[in-house]
Length: 145
Image (tube, rainbow, N blue to C red; front, side, top):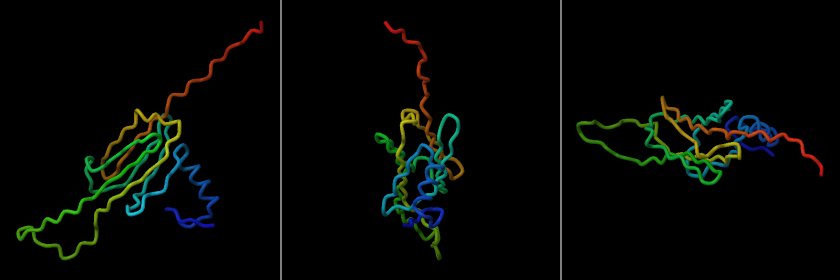
């Protein structure tokens, strides 16, 4: 069975393997119908995962980032505004349009959801997902009574 992803048509088993490799720690959920699919890159550092979403032409106030239990949702809702006056001129051709988008990810237990942060610069939204500090299990010797 084949399924379409950003990187083309691939067998489902290879797709699963690619997601395990690239999303290492983040399980991707399907995108919601009616929204554009914004491309993302996910990077792992020693102390966090970073979700990079390309979204040029927006302001930081335009984004909505929510965590509900273990689901992270990144979205932008575009409101169409028509502002044309005689002094502004009129568009003869308008090929690019802003589109709403929504991406959701299932976070695993490695993510410290209380410390998630985000920044937006140069058309790229970066959501920082810090890893929880892993405490090593205590090593001890138990005496038998």
